[in-house]
Image 1 (cartoon, rainbow, N blue to C red):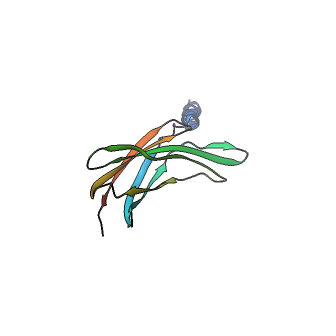
Image 2 (tube, rainbow, N blue to C red):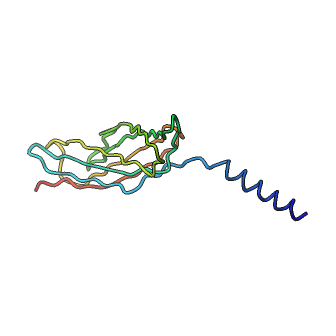
Image 3 (tube, rainbow, N blue to C red):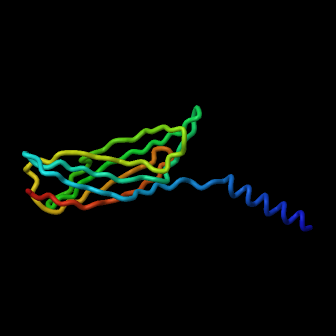
Length: 140
């Protein structure tokens, strides 16, 4: 009877370990900075992503995420100021990926508080997450 209980518990543990959980994309540490240029500003932004699915093929692991960044200005929202995808391969498991964006704003934009909103999707698991970060435009 005791052996049977141990066997059943061992099987349950094995089944739950093999079932695996679906990856859940999580964004972290969003940052944004604006640097003054002669004719406007250069905006640099980053956000980290983890929890994305990785596919194994030919002894390599592959990750694929897509992103779009909207900018909320003091006056309105500008859709897709930057967008793209990151396709990476590695021999070891990825812990995270960094999404980096860089774009220029001309003098038509006023000084003030702005916000970037990152919309990111894991292309393999189809999980999504968003993150936002504020930054300021000022003439120095």
